[in-house]
Length: 188
Image (cartoon, rainbow, N blue to C red; front, side, top):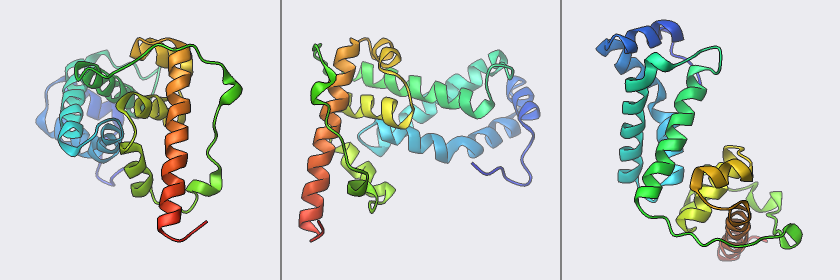
């Protein structure tokens, strides 16, 4: 993320937001809007839901900014974590369907790097939107965010085996989507 030339330093921005300074709040909003909107859109099925998650998450940021501890993380990481958790809360309210399963790693599918190397970010996002919500959420948390299955299971209130199963299903479905896409576009 590039910082605008006229941007306030993080601490000044934090102090301003904590004091309900509208200029500081507007700067934080503008500074984090694009990366956090992209994050929210990865977890939701449409732009309206992504905007709802974004605004709910930023409201949490503004309400809790006094609690921010720069010795534990950077401001970007703190805001990012709030957004991920807000997206998960949103999906939970939307009643994500989940089934607990026992899973072993022996049948773990993989997506070959060459299958996605020529895809744009928009194409990959399009494919992710084709997945069931829970599988897409686990894929996002594991592959993109870097969370471990144990943490994902706690966040989503599912078992680790179910988390692994959803990741496996996401990989299988994405591989199928990539294969169909390549056939339709005449590539191998």
